[in-house]
Length: 353
Image (cartoon, one colour):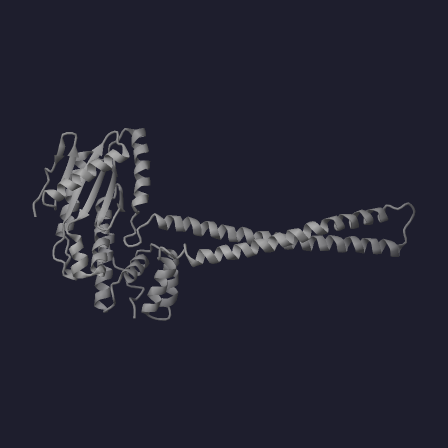
């Protein structure tokens, strides 16, 4: 069973696409597991050309089976596909190719002296005083041709081995770059991870110092999310986290969004002052509260958001201010946006649950 590959929704954003996929999975009675969702979202969003090509090849023979989807996820989306056995295999193969190349080089070096000696002898024979006989001349030239041919053959083998090693090295380099990129990505939501967010923050602070533009940070926590995990199961909780990630991406198009913990997210907003960031935080809060979570019977979900902004930000201080604002939002009843100012926390846009 599977979803037909030609069913592309005419959607304007990722949220519509995600909801369309979930509705299609439900309609066909297919499991909306994280792996199934990831595969179909990547396929229908054209986000992974290699996955799309592989899926199209499978779809050409009929609907995808559960085993097909699992294999597509493992080969094209799993965060471990390039860091485990596959990379070990590449390294083993590279070592073998390198040994072959070194052996060929040793053979070529060992034969070099003999090769040079043959060439010198042939040259001496061709420059002998007097007129060599045709038979002797032919024999000398044949010997030189054999030596040159053997040399070309050895050099060709060495070149072939070295080209193979170079190709394997490039493959390992590509896999390592991909593995490093995956290590900076949260596999559930596709958002940057905590470490990647730190790097983005450092880059944004450096750019802010150059342009004198403000920089804002939003720290966002879902309220009582443990109850979702405990009461409705891991799959429902994962679906909720993916939906929140899509909502944040949709509202923070001018910034960067990351998942920095279980149900904790962060948004980096270059050019946003505190008032603008708080207004955006309020729109996000309302979007989460107003979203339909009925698929898993979750009812309503809410989010608390801490806001901090500065014209001359310091990374640790900016995050600390946003954390303190978030703690106030939690302690004051949750489901609210709190700004941290020089005079302390304020929550002008608060809406009590």
